[in-house]
Length: 346
Image (cartoon, rainbow, N blue to C red; front, side, top):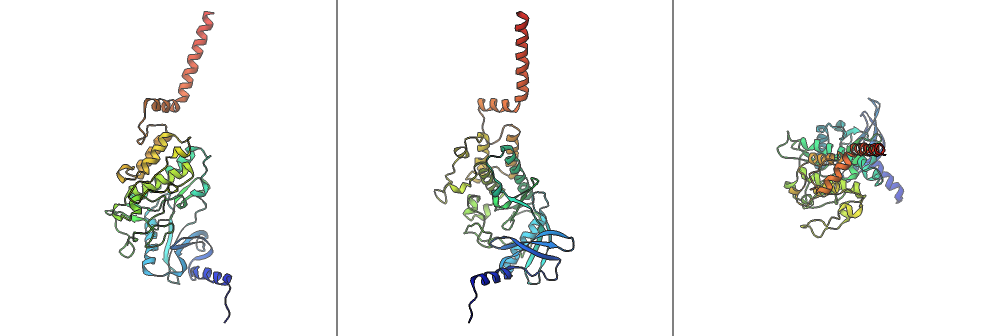
């Protein structure tokens, strides 16, 4: 018997993972991403002569429950037509039996690869607003993402923001028609991890709300995504995840280091926004992604933010910053008047 080398075995595994697109309109080019459940390939749509991303289950899996997961994800994406959510183009079954869907091929960098603490704060917050807007749109359609993190946010070359990977999204009760009886099953709780593997993952440590980490599926709502958005804001401001601070216990609040302890240049009002979104108890967080985005917008406009109780000095400082041009003109006018009076008396 002749043994195959490790290189040959690895090559055979890679070939086996590639989907069979024979007889379809798609020609595979290369694999561009691999998750716990699915693989994403760069493909060429030969009918429309355009590049697309094609997603299928990894390693030739055709189990009905796993097929249902990718079918469910495709149906969720089809509901969410928004500039901040990647659009789906096609859906079907390949000759090898695997369900697939194609979507827009996103060119850009992940948010975790692009983060730069030296960038202007206003620029970072405007990107964060776009993330909140896409999530708020999904919430309006009764869909909770449940795995928001910098790795699932793509930033395009022209500043476009796309929220990716809706594989563990949850459809809220009372929303529009269910996705389907075959594909709306809830992933099992009890384990957490970074990969999106059916039945084991509900999110990513460091960006996962406490109720999500405890497996309390019935408690998950818009505020669960608000926690993850707060963790993304924390990451943008400090360059690190809240997970870098170890918890004291499963049932206790995370010993979260305030952002200003890591970077003193962070404004107090912005720190308050971040910490309100990251509140341990759901009722203490913003009620929605829209409310979080509104507070960030108020901060950018130098208005009073909901999360930060201002003192007299804070209010004076904020107003002076907001109207500094008008104040400078008034002061210049008064100085000129004083100089004219002095000159006229001399």
